[in-house]
Amino acid sequence: MSYEVELFRGGDQTPVRRVPLEPVLRRFFESQLDQALSGAVIQLLFLPEPEPGPAVSLENTGGFSVANLRPRYGHVQVRVLLNDELLYQHPHPVSELLGRALRDTLRELAPDERHWGFGLHGPNFDHGPLVRPVPEMEHGVHIEVGAHRGRIFDLEELPPPDPPLSTLAELGADATPSPGKPIAVVLGKSMYTAFTETHPFSTEVEEGGFLAGRVYRDAAAPGRHLIELTAMIPAQRTGASMLSFTFTGESFLSVGELLAVRRQGEELVGWYHTHLFAAGRGLGLSSVDVRLHRSTFQRPWQVAALVNISRGARVLRFYCRDDARGMMLAPYWTVP
Image (cartoon, rainbow, N blue to C red):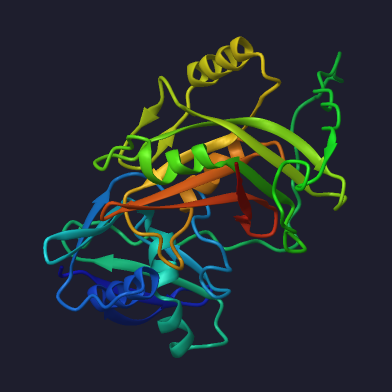
């Protein structure tokens, strides 16, 4: 891999220095995969797909804003191999990956600087121009031109009725969630076994589907919702690419019809999908996953289940909405 990263500092994007990309990514993935990667091969496939707006949170970069100044290639497919074994494979927005990987380097260069840019140098990149982001304007005034007619009528979605009350004990779980967790998930041992052992997930491509269940308000903790999972339903007629997994309108119609036929008082309580690499300390939902959840599953109690598959082992985690950080881990319990 013969790529370099040129760093630019401040609002005027002043060039600072170039750093080799390979050791930066090696250190980053060692920390995320919890293992040494001496001798590992890191393969990068940069894709001419634009980044979907702000691609990385300030939390993930240590408080830095990081801009990709060669936005023509906005996504990268990463593969990490060690002794011919695939350890990691996943797509990333370029700003997300490098913003996280470079944060220690940026902190060492100028700990008080909060605005950075980078430009990649390497195959296919040196022929493209650097594009500096438009600076944010202060004291601006937005003026709308043209006459506006008043609305004739409005359409508003009626809020759904409040879910019934229950407790973890009534759902069969002998536990107390940590304070501050807005969601607690309960699933039967058979479903847990399906997620972690028996369901025939592919080891070649990522898969996904829907979660059916029942929603309750926690009588023991006002403001918390309890999710009782009853079924995992593989999605039909989904869209998929190297960059993302997408539910279509037909996917939702199909699962809605199935729940109506089952007549068990179930709702669509979320979704699940797989990642084909080990569950590292910092590798949970990707920014692509977070955007899909927050744009598609908008009920505050809907959850995302993630199954990491690697070397024949599986790890199951649940996530729920967190307005401050996008998504957060949600506790779960298995019951008979």
